[in-house]
Length: 309
Image (cartoon, rainbow, N blue to C red; front, top):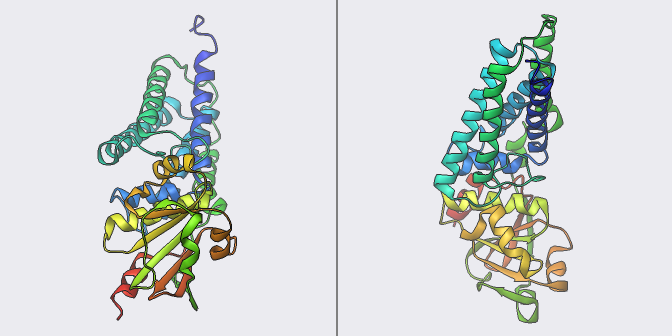
């Protein structure tokens, strides 16, 4: 042990800090982390917000236990090892189903990693935990008995306080009723950089106006991808604003390459959106009849609208 010095304690604290950072960074925004579970069929629209926050709570709890060095040999190291193996299995499933594309969400949107990069990161952490199981000394001083439930309660409630689940979501899902003609002429001509054709004057369409560098637009595009994957019949269309060089990164992060799009530049984009993004219009025979916030865009409501004559 003298040869190792303080290395085991430093390694323990470092792994604990990584888990804390991983949990906290997932919360802002947490929607991409939630959508990953829906995209893979692990959860639905109602359970995903709770599953995501409970997994964040688990990371926070284990991170705190590691930093304080509590119950290492009896609980903490084994629980951390199982958690890392679980996340690695989840990433392998994501890699198998979706390929090594986009951001796995392990550190939210702040430090983006592909599934393979995150699997390698988890492999290093698992090696570190196995090292600690054999070489970390047992703490001489045990924590007060009341401290464990305090840390557990703090870890459980913090994700729901910092980023609450919208318990009134059922009421807020209804889109705002409007009625004005969509000026489709602004989406043509010199302002159109590239993209697919759209005839908004015929039938029903849900047209989403996104900036390729907007965080909320990326979350909305990811949500559209999940809905389109589950229901290919939904007539989504994206109107994107931004530089051509940002397009590939936008599709990698949002997985929204399954949705037709066009790139619209400059003043025409600002004119049709009023300068606000993301803007999502429900268009019926050339008229915008509803508009939605991306958070309140609800899959079943869209399906009901499409089935209404």
